[in-house]
Length: 309
Image 1 (cartoon, rainbow, N blue to C red):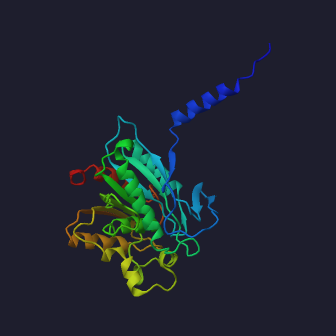
Image 2 (tube, helix red, strand yellow):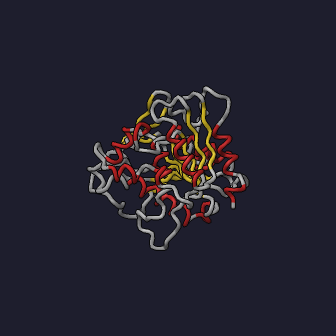
Image 3 (cartoon, helix red, strand yellow):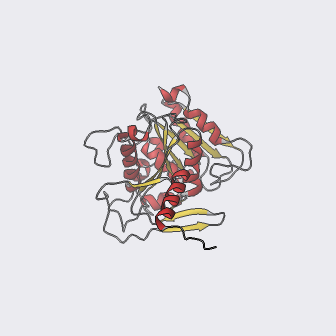
């Protein structure tokens, strides 16, 4: 019996069907045209997998948003922009990005993984503002397209891990100044912040020197250190925050979360902080030293009335 070959067009249809069923995330460029604050440079973006199948992206020059939307039936209207960590030298796009986005989708929360630019003097005119421009642009894009994405434009939060937490907290404390073109004066204030073992301060003994040097240079001025020590920039308009840290974190001291939470409380800003006794740094969604899931607590917090008003 002669078996007939499957026609190529049918193979394409089958493949398209399976891609649709798998809900492959949509990746869009962050900027429509010219990327602000950029020098002409060859794009040498690099992808690698570290032990444990951990996806790492480095040398990012062209920022993107990867879009993860829940089903219409599950959707709560809330959305989170996720900033992976990596010390402002690379991005842990998997376990601090796409894996987290999928978990949010399971609970009806839209998620957008931000592949932000890595600060570099050779590719940026002002490297300390490059990542912040990308975070602000992400907020602008998502807020102006909220109806298309099926989300509430007043329930858009920003989340960050480690140095990504510094970026998220910078977006949450520097929103009164537009670092990007914003002709329609769209609010660039995130509605809430989720900060996981975050770099917050560049002051004194709690600074993560690697993140500070990569963002600000090896000899930043006191004024620049203060400008990007985000516990000093909190006002009565700063959005609420949810923070997670392990007390034995030997990379980014947990005092970073404490000083940020204390400053928020002084301004009567709602804040929740969850401290693990152990877990070190970089545990992602799963701190294997504890049965308590911070992600479950976070999702419940997003649904609290104080964040819906």
